[in-house]
Length: 545
Image 1 (cartoon, rainbow, N blue to C red):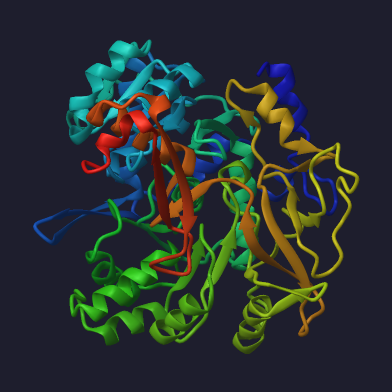
Image 2 (cartoon, one colour):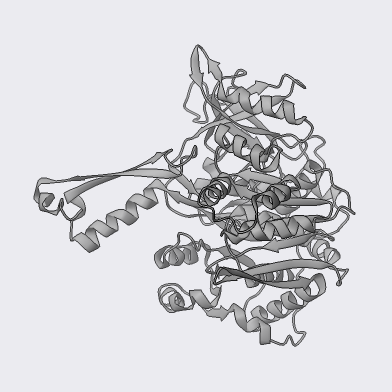
């Protein structure tokens, strides 16, 4: 997409209520100033990183000053290896690492752009595709990723592949200078599976992340002096943890607990964090984490006593996203924490946050709001919806429409209360564009709204305050979400087809393979059924399969 085309989205970064620029709510003149201000107090505790080995957790704690110095060395390391402002860098990490976080701040200092690699799902072919789509010429990688780098370099036009761990011994010569950044400058490219299995690179700007910060601070009603603790285990290659990590880097007094991934030790570390809670402890998670906790309890494998976990969760604002939150999850959350979770809703293209369950309602009123979706009917047909809350005025706006296809007779007609329809949204949080795909970008912006969510919802008027509550029904795409990892059904089908061709010597025309999402182990559609139909000439392969 050309710069001229990108500018069509620049003017959208305004408050929906007044039309004033989002920057009017920030005291900083530029993105760079915002990050520098957040790190002025060098003695503040900033990040605790936990590594796992032999069922034990090892902690490394950094102050804001120590983290800033490491990021400065990272900026010099990148600059001296040819990275400049606007250059895109593949972040090839095998898990959440301290170095991924450090080089994200280093990228702010230098003005270069991280490009995410999904360590849960991306094979080398997909990483090469991401390099080609974004034009990335650099890779930053960790030790576990090292064996894969040469193949990726040989298949993509990579100028330099840099070992993240070398940062520890790298001495900055002071040659780098802070980049001059604007709010519409690209901050990061996060890849999403989308609806087809082909990766789409979502370009998100500094202005998008400023809107995200302001949205969260308005939602949690925090002041400049509120001390936040944020507990991260979801993958940094997703928009979820990316948004929370960036928020912590923009806000003084915020402390991050960063885990390499979800593991049994998650609950032990959360218990410790809750004991040291300051004003607010926020733990983004997915519903499956609660299912995993239940499984650990049933197997008597909890890492700490159950009472300690319950006490910790009672002090924690649990933000659940990515999958439906139904009766089973709600019951378990109440049992373990004695309060309802926060359900948040959004996507990569919306810089994470579009909606959340309101904090203004009492626990009883919230419970009724959840239950209203489980027993809804429209035109005498029973339909089930899962509560995803309300938009964040004046930062985001949503509505349900009957159709998003311009050729449809009900195109962009607003749904009646209770009527299912497509969720569309507006706000300064919406992405700039899909990298290298102007047609796809154009297709998801209609009538001044972002229409690419493709989630089917309905809205009900809340009995307590008369506001509209939204309920998620289904996704009009083929996406499987399991434990925070996203896979499209097409992607799974493609990979399984390769197995049949390469390991069983079948030709593609000799079989038909289909993947269907199912709710089996939980109330979430995080399992799938695979069917394989063999042709006559491949019937002899049936016993092997």
